[in-house]
Image (cartoon, rainbow, N blue to C red):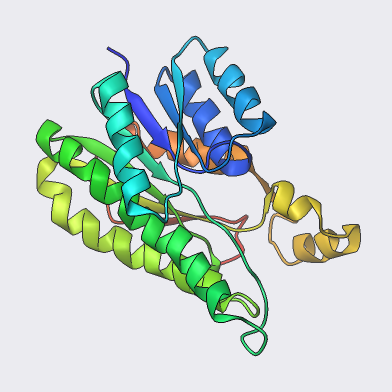
Length: 244
């Protein structure tokens, strides 16, 4: 019987690449999305081309009832969830002097509360099965902070604390919980940057380049495998050496 992975915010970027990478490992995939679009259909098609099943589950992770509903949909379809990747996230960058209250709360609600909402609804099934892997996508700015990102940095730092605490709670049930902290990764978010800005960013990274979504996905592939069975409560940076 195939293992099942739920990836939130999985229609593009890092989330999509994680879904495709786990599909290549034989996982049946549940792709969470907030709004249906062409990217969703394309992602579903690409996953199914790996000869695995894929179900899209609509829902806003910041809404607890939504997460409760779509987790039940997955259980009804697949009967279990072996892997949860909390990837859904948004940014609303600006200096705190200009930041509106909703800019702060919206980012916290999606990035941090959303991680809680989905995990809260998945964890009972993993506890009953006495096995599971949870990977939370944080960020290097959750460790270092970043000007203009007090909201985003706070949400990603919160995910780190959440990860470590949950890892201690569920280790006795053979559920491993880890966080991945990407640095600058080539996605649609970085595509909009001017070339000189990208070059400046790359010059400050020891490997002299931005990462790719595959770099993050490959770490997730390792963390959900049996090769990582003695690793839990950790935060692993994927940043080209930026935080050495």
